[in-house]
Length: 164
Image (cartoon, rainbow, N blue to C red; front, side, top):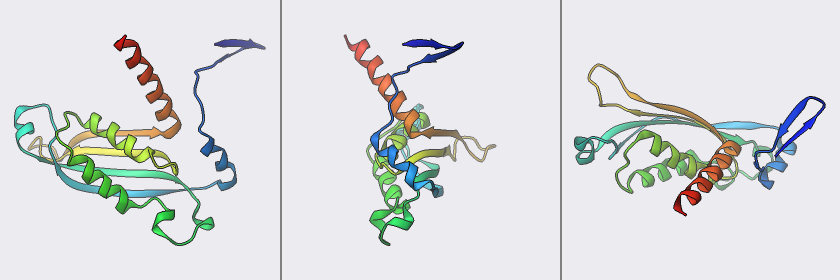
């Protein structure tokens, strides 16, 4: 839908903002939960040898989180816990082979964005043992929750169209 108003075009993308974001006005602050260079063994890759033998990957995350620290009791359940995120990462990687780092990143975004307090994520995923002459190879991706939800919604619509 497009509307013109005084030489300005406005295009509606059908995006929506979850109601939980309306409370951000009163919080007006953020903090970052950091996980730096978590090294785990996993089955990842497109090549035959990568499907047979697990390899080391390095995961780094910076989670931008709503700062509610002044309004909650001192309890691990009231904050985004790096321990909880790491345990979920380990569980995710134990579920079986993943072809691409990009696919793994999408699974991690989906996992993290289930927590309403997480607003955006910076992620670096690296394979450590691919080339002898490189320390690592990988991807670095930044996603905002609102953009991620909108993108996922559009992707789901495309999938539905293709299935018909």
